[in-house]
Image (cartoon, rainbow, N blue to C red; front, side, top):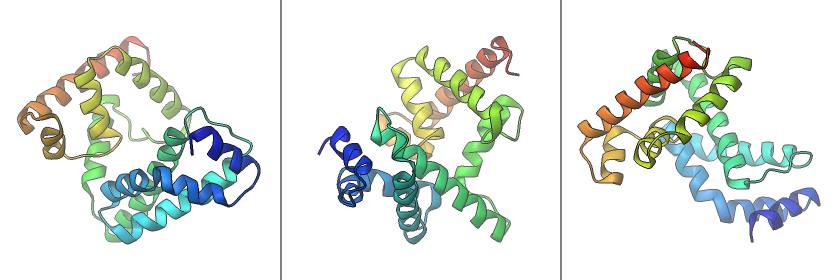
Length: 184
């Protein structure tokens, strides 16, 4: 089924919508949640919670991209679970390290919350459209999908050091862009 057909099932309140969503996007969602949480049981719970949120959001929402809409929900649910898990064990994770790297760009600790996050998100989107395909892809793999530098290096057949350099330069350009936009 294509996205439009699945969305129509949600609008018709047909429970088959969840089955079709899982068939189309289940492995993507579980992979994303697993990369964030590093725990398959928590990841599975987050994906199921995400399907519930999707059920609650469709209708009234009618996204252009069901995959993009759903991965954003999975990412947010998984990050919430990660924060909860990290606060319970008073530790950090590779994902919080990734978010910390972005906080260094903005100089803010509230990158994920409030109106500022929406403005920053739109600005980052505009910024990424001006970057090379390689820099944009590597940036998204690191800060949206939370891949490690090693995973990114293997995916793009470059060294982990090159990944670090590309990320560092991209963060610096992002910092300058956000300054020009008046967001810093």
